[in-house]
Amino acid sequence: AQKITQTQPGMFVQEKEAVTLDCTYDTSDPSYGLFWYKQPSSGEMIFLIYQGSYDQQNATEGRYSLNFQKARKSANLVISASQLGDSAMYFCAMWGAYNTNAGKSTFGDGTTLTVKP
Amino acid sequence: NAGVMQNPRHLVRRRGQEARLRCSPMKGHSHVYWYRQLPEEGLKFMVYLQKENIIDESGMPKERFSAEFPKEGPSILRIQQVVRGDSAAYFCASSPGDRVYNEQFFGPGTRLTVL
Image (cartoon, rainbow over all chains, first blue to last red; front, side, top):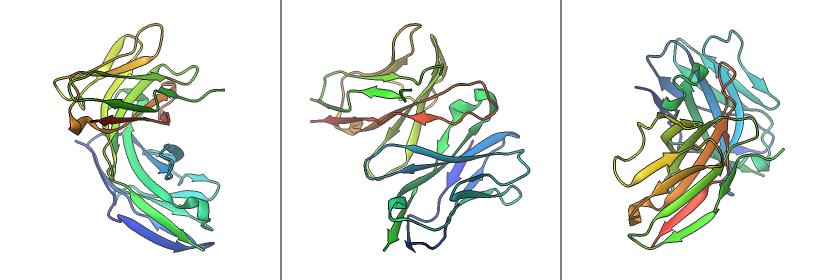
């Protein structure tokens, strides 16, 4: 069975500072992808970044980077230079490769990030 | 280049009625996923479909819920004889299915309220 744990229900960060949102996972699948999504108060789910389990380098997308530590089974999201528009709920998720295990999509309970001016 | 479309955006039903939620995937995407999000909670996987096939329905309640993705037309999530506990946001996502790891693109969701 797959499991995603996000231990921070809420986080605060000062505008322009960096923040790390924690995510740990558990799976018996040898190959998997880890994903982060943002859900603003408007409710839509916005894809941010993903990391494949066999990728050698940590993924980066603009101000988002994923600190992937496979041995520790962690996939933390780092947001640099926080902006007020980053205030939202953030979800860590995982599923398998080639859609064969995509049906085992698992999401964490989310972390609410509030950026202070 | 339309994204994933869901309709209706808001749906109100009385207990015992049926709810039909529609999802049109992104152009070129043949894989559809349905999720349920209860207030203040994360997303819970319900079902994964490809055209005319249910691939994984391990997250679907055994009764009253069904899903389909016909050859033509949108994917439908159907909830029969709704109860108050069915009130939630239902999200549909789609992916192309042609890469090793396929990110899922989400629709805006359907907010179901059962009175």
